[in-house]
Image 1: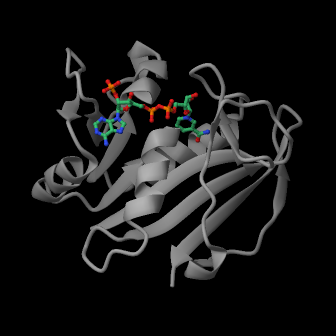
Image 2: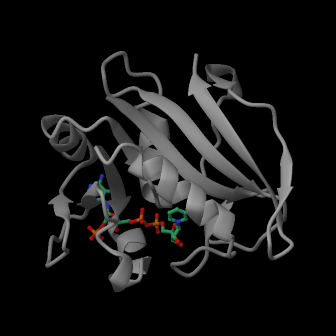
Amino acid sequence: MALKIIVAVSQNGAIGIEGSIPWRLPEDLKRFSKLTKGNSNNAVIVGRRTWESIPSKYRPLPGRLNIVLTRNAVDLDAWPSLSLYAALKKAKQWNCEDIWIIGGQSLYQEVMAKYVNRTDEFRLEAIHLTLIDAIVEGDTFFPFFDPMLFQKIDPERTQTSENGMTYKFLDYKRH
Ligand SMILES: NC(=O)c1ccc[n+]([C@@H]2O[C@H](COP(=O)([O-])OP(=O)(O)OC[C@H]3O[C@@H](n4cnc5c(N)ncnc54)[C@H](OP(=O)(O)O)[C@@H]3O)[C@@H](O)[C@H]2O)c1
């Protein structure tokens, strides 16, 4: 079992604006789907606002245990969880291979604040980051993280999307 983050970030750290993602990058959606699905034995943990931003026809995300963090569980089509730790324990109970934190800002903040330096099975093991090669207006941001704690797995390579945007896939593994 490994706890991982997946996120797409602009050069100025923005991840969202007005409840959605400020860009459209089909290659990133493909990577998101491939990584989070894995061998169809993974969990995704998502904040309620991000959950609501996913069009209803795409949720729950297929082939993954979907856990939504909320303090006001309503009819969600997913497992509600009142805390991040309870969500992680649920994913462990289900013997999930990878547990993906898929946002938004509040979840990324909590994981980076509390799960980077743990010594148990819930330590954050990897960050899979798509760096959008642009400065973008945003109202939600990815928190700063200490690059010394993580090793970059592959060399950076700038790629160009079919829509002309440039971006890099960066994979960090905990030392
Ligand atoms: N670029 C990317 O890769 C990416 C990825 C994901 C999201 N985003 C963007 O991020 C933005 C949303 O971020 P956000 O911070 O506003 O919202 P969020 O993290 O998606 O959701 C926040 C909500 O989650 C629940 N929650 C959070 N922490 C909790 C905890 N510890 N225990 C129980 N419930 C908890 C609360 O729900 P209740 O209010 O129901 O209690 C809270 O209001 C959107 O713009 C979205 O598009 C970007």
